[in-house]
Structure formats: structure tokens, C-alpha cells
Length: 173
Image (tube, rainbow, N blue to C red):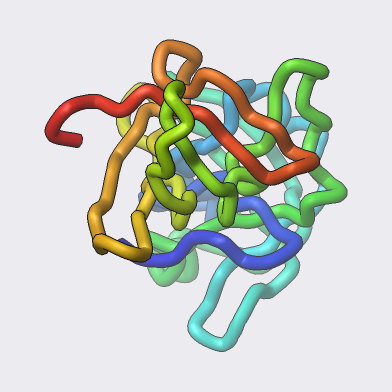
């Protein structure tokens, strides 16, 4: 699985295709609220040599996708070169989570146990499925990997201060 975490940044979407002839691009969003794209004035595109800042010139929301006009993409031909590129924002740009919520990125490195207090492992990664985010938890001693949906049914407690989490495991996952 490709590493999506970059210290101090949040992965917010991936460019999927050009849109029209003006250089706009369709973005598969990783944000809960697509309207939030309208509040951004710049973002970062991940290239092989690092992140590159670009201004957002326009935002359209169409059928669950964001269509962005970016200052670094003048036309459709250039937009083709950005297909598959990941988009990031600085952590400071992110909308703060509600009191009972947290950023998935903050779960990386958390010590995980089950409701009985048995050690499960450490959160190594997170990723999004079509519906819910998933935590990748690995037991360093056994090498066993657990995939746990990051929803209340399975994540019973998250303590950001002590970097501890309690989860209910799914047999076979």
C-alpha cells in the first residue's frame, strides 16, 4: 500500500481526469464536506520531487466530485499530465474536527488494544474505501495485520493525549 501520509499535510483528493478544454481537472475527494473546497485558495500537488503549491482559481461541485481550476494547469493538454496526482493541504488549512471527532492522521502510531485490554498492535496507516475509512493495525511481535473500519461500531475509544485506542476486531480482518 502506497504511503499517503506526509508530515504536516493532509491528503484531500486525487486528480482523476481533465474536465473541459480550459485546464480544469476532476478530483476524487477525500473530504466529508465537498463545500469545503470552496474555502481553499491554494493546495499542494504531490510530484516525484515533493509537494508543489498552486492556487485554486475555480471550484465546481458535480456529482460527488470537485472540478478545480488550478493556476499551474493552463489547458486540457497540461491537465492530462496531472491525472492520478494527489492533492494535499497544510494541516493548518484543515477545518478543525468537532469536539468528539479527530483527524485520521492523528491515529497513526497509536497503541491499540481490544475491549478486554489485550494488545492488538499499532495503527500503521489509514485508507478510504468506498464508504468508510479503514485503520491498518499491525502487531509488531507477530506481524499480524488487522483492518478495522474507523467507525463507532468498531472503534470504541480514542485517547489522543495518551495515543491509545480501543477497538473491537472483526474475525478474519
